Length: 110
Image 1: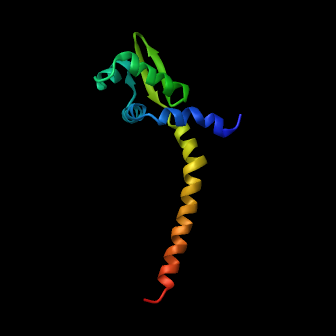
Image 2 (image 1 turned 135 degrees about the horizontal axis):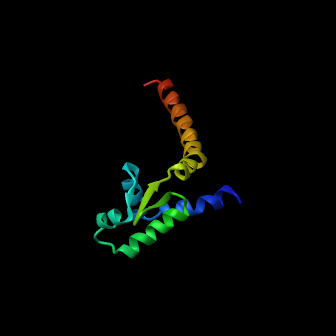
Image 3 (image 1 turned 90 degrees about the horizontal axis):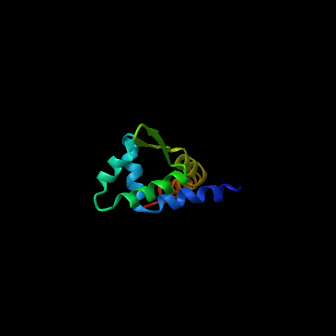
């Protein structure tokens, strides 16, 4: 399977603003599903659970049952993979262009 097709679920998960908000909350600490539901009073529990399912399918959230509670943990490795594969490559290219532009501008007489 190509890296593009394995990245698709991650891009899909990150495409929705509510899922990004959930990931932001999990960045600070793992949270129970009940706690996450309370933090989004405008959504019903079923909707929050659907968002969590998409995040789990993208391997961005790892859920662990502890007694009656379901703890959701952030897994940032898929995001790092996206960064390594896409962002850092293009950022390096952009920096070299900006560096060249700076050199050209500094070399021009006023």
